[in-house]
Image 1 (spheres, rainbow, N blue to C red):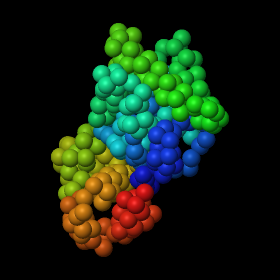
Image 2: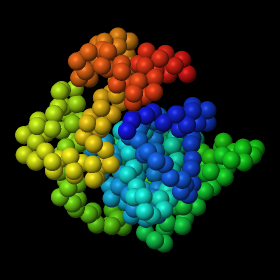
Image 3: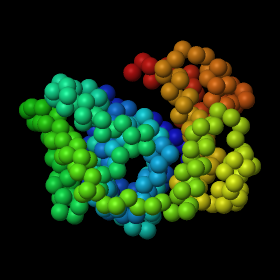
Image 4: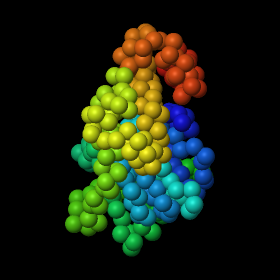
Length: 289
């Protein structure tokens, strides 16, 4: 399994500043760990799934909404035996900036400050209005009628204001569920990997550091995240490599060493396997866009 920078999302964000999908039920054979530009509002409608954002794991129920920065590594892990339906909107920081007063703009963006995302649980009598908000956004994008850009910004601002109001009424939230024993340990594994991914981590290291059986580590991690430990570790390294390739002028060999690869050849081979192109081509193409 590979980590990707979600190209359709980024292309849409660079073109329009916003990307919307309402009531999506398409199934993918592979649900990759990925990142993208901008911010995301994800809304779970139906199915059985958990969502990994950074080091946090969310068991989803209908009406659950997650808000997070697209640059945070994330992955949904839906069950195969039931329909999986969701809506989501991605937008850039600049998309709303001219639409809102500075104080309101900062308050709304603060919804995305939590490193592992923010969970909002909408009550049954609130869900229809929220779902309608996503549909209105998608309709405007599809029609591209006169003034649709202004309408899009207005609808998005309204949705964010509703979310902000909800976030300030914590008594309306469902009680926070305690993670299962497996989820609690997987969070510990995620934390360890994210803190030590530049080192040569082995299952023996994880077992010793976390006082967990190696078989249990492999089984529980795969069960909760849908990924093997090695796949997640490699995905994390490649993600960090992409950030360095885009934000620094460091040579590929220096980046390889910094993120834990023994040789630049191994790094380049792994990067191409996970990203589809070599580090040099990724840097050239991404910077030129």
